[in-house]
Length: 499
Ligand code: BES
Ligand code: ZN
Ligand code: ZN
Image 1 (cartoon, rainbow, N blue to C red):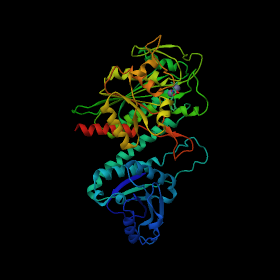
Image 2: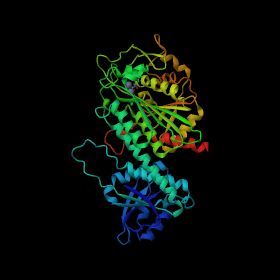
Image 3: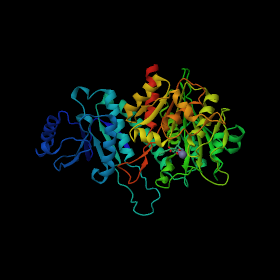
Image 4: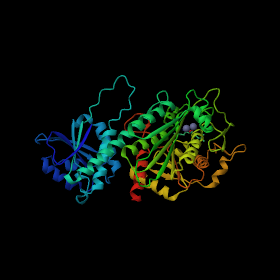
């Protein structure tokens, strides 16, 4: 797939024109005159979200089809990306090999030359067109014909915007391809992606995109005293891994050090506190936090952003055998604190305890953010529309909320009051891993808080409701890629505000 920017197009193509409802009539009249289109278009096309009309222009020298794409009333980069993705995925046969995108009808005239706006639009179109080609049916042996997506996408823009547009193309390509890697990781079942394979994926990404990856294996994990990860892994036939990724560009400028931790449970049966079998297959997504962390390090390295980024992933499945951890067991963690296991299905927080403590002790980052499909309770609170955000730091909360609005990967803050500590107070150890049903997402966050050593810029994102969801591109639930764009926007905003 090819993306380019030109001033004029000479080859035959389909022309995609995205519209918002504002000034629609005026813009349509111009179009009708320009291409001698039927006036009925005025009453037929309302530019509603994802509305599509294809028109055939047999008299025109180069334009074979005009495809009007509705974006609805107000337009955002995210809605354009989504509409493009839907259009290219659902109507690929109609588009032909060569597609030209005219961005001129989205804006009021005065904004059409605004570099930031054009850049966002180009990036969204590129990402949308690439994401549209994602194939979830990788294991199908039949009914999987080679897809006929358009090969060439061209943006027609004045010369002075070409450099900006080229940068936007590159960014759109990097984010979409990284997001597809995340889709793959999250969608793969555990018999194709276990903790060793997840670590191997990170190692390969590191080699390909130039960031360092160190994988600790079971022996080392034991030697380091990561009792949380060992405990969850002891009922498994697959040894745990602990993945440490680091991206640090060479520069004289001081870099902000951001540490990410992702929950890498490759399958969560619940352990001895076993889950109901209804929908249990979805627990292959329990490493979505890990996938987002690996993807974010990949994307930031490919974009070569000026930031020092560390990604930590403790990984194991949560299985059951004769050695599996039992409710009541006491576990000694890397931090030195002991955990009383009350429910073996609250395993994520137990491995994150080691991930967070390791990050804090060995890297002392300026900011710590963990992402985890941690609690069903978070899904009960916020549904499928926002991740739960937990932090004591108002500035970090505001920054993550802003990035969430920008990318439509929203976060919603929930409290971390000490009143909730009593629910996870253990008689025998320092803390217990289950706080009862009330406020389950909050008590999970309070548990994690014990392992960040009072770090003043720590945030926990519970992504249980947003990582794996209904989609227009699959019949059952599938990976959303949530978090990559949020974190990249958060990091980029931080870079912009520091210069
Ligand atoms: N992996 C689950 C949480 C989850 C739920 C992820 C829905 C994605 C979608 C987690 O390990 C878990 O089982 N949590 C328990 C915690 C409880 C035992 C305290 C839950 O939410 O029921
Ligand atoms: Zn669980
Ligand atoms: Zn889990």
